[in-house]
Amino acid sequence: MTREGFDRFCRSLTGTTNVIQWGNASVWKVGGKIFAICSHWGPGEQQKISFKCSDLSYTLLSEQEGIAPAPYLARAKWVQLQKKRAMTDKDIKAYVEEAHRIVAAKLTKKVRKELGL
Image 1 (cartoon, rainbow, N blue to C red):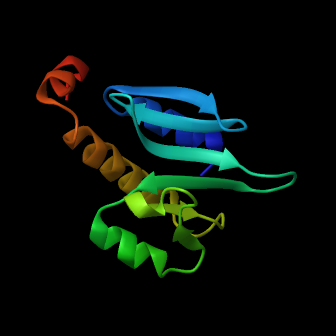
Image 2 (tube, rainbow, N blue to C red):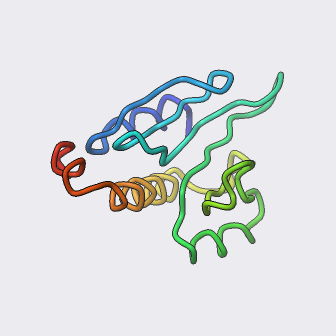
């Protein structure tokens, strides 16, 4: 999945906002809480997509080739796709949508209502 495709998909989810931070990373939030990131680290590095997971998904995905616990975010059950073909675009979308749902569910009822969730 390209960064443009990643951004387009995240933008389509309800109540999302995007900021560029941490060295040009595309950081997606819902209710001010991060649920997915697309970044490049270092010269010539490929893009890496990171997202929040359920406990079970974190355990299973962390064991797959090309996917690792996300740096700095693993304690919160985040994974990072470290190889371009680690996951299909369809699966990336499904996991990012689930990340959005997990993070949105932790927002207050008032914020969820304001965001239309």
